[in-house]
Image: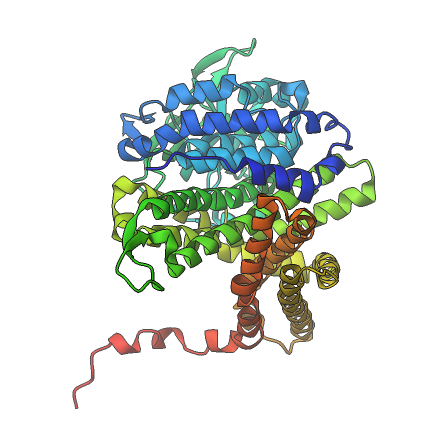
Length: 607
């Protein structure tokens, strides 16, 4: 089983040469970012390889355990979390006034990748903790910020996001947890499911961010409020008091991420769990999206992180495994399987798409830094619009493609990949959840098409397409054959995206006039998101190629050019298929009636 090795060279390339660290470092609060990038990456890589990676397989085998209302994490996880917290990793992107280090999201994204790649189950805890911090930071009172955020950043406490319920799933309009006013707080009763790290043995207190309805709340999503519900109540001096009326009722037995406890949480079994309103009543959905969008971006990173870990394992195995002769050799002399063309194709498939996903995520992270700290209000608004456009793409495209890549990495092992001891089977099991949680691919695609494209009248989308078209022109002007050839393929993809977007815009206008078919249009929502993902990934690879062609004597940049060429030849052609699927395929998706879907399974009527 291979040891995780962080792709530090590619991190530096993306941070400094592609995503624009110099521009980020000009933003207020980030002036020292350029000085700490390499030390932070080196330390994070050491922690990932030497502390988290060794616990990944053992944690998977042991799993989290539930006994009499308490959750115990696998051996070594509690100690690793203490090391993680003591080293200050939780506070990397958090404000210094609350104990954080205030570093840009661009750098934090690279660090996040290392945590996820080395131990996804462990890293789920800090990932959700960050969402809780963000919600309190942006929506809580000053008292709430002072009371909870320093403890969450230090790792003395952890935070969770308690959103869905058995009857609700992803439809939060059906949330039924109640919150009844009682003096300066509320009493909550209800049940939440699928709560990551809802209970554990890391810390003495867990701060739950809970969605619930007050007695006067309207039905639907407009009647949801957000509450802070600590596992243990606080005394006047801030010390821990008695246990709140919140209890873990059990943990799920899952396909993967066995070491990450996924809890069912009961509130109010003894009369009501004490909760404190965050912000205003009935505005919980807005606050929830603060937590959710941060988590959605992180899950996209999580997807390609696991893909990279699986790719590393496949590459290591392919270099060592000797089997069958070289297809071009006359004599039967067994060779390492990396010398077989199809294995090389699978490895290049992994490498090219992982690099494209990583670059798009880093680009989005840099835009997030500008949206957070740019003093120019226009630039800030433009950056935020790009972040909102690309967040569902980073989440859904990356996780969809990553599951395919991990499958391909497993295929490189042949039958050994199906054996747990090789490790790659765990990555296959673990990565599958990433397409589902924090909003499925269908939900992300509806968000992209409905909220980010149609409601925006395509303004931000067309701006992004314009940026891509400018890159296509630069590529076409190159004298490097690989660069110009890639530019031709990217040009076709961008054209397909632009034409499809115009078609969808026209369909939207027809629907407004009562002539179009809304359901048929949204049948193409997922293909539209995938079209965006593959094209935006190509855009990033094109930008990388323009940088690399100037330094092609260096092996790293030479490999960048070859990888971009592969992406252009093998990945970008998928975009024409998506265009056809979106513009033509909606009607056939819905052509068969529900009761006709299983006609082939019905017994023949006897005459």
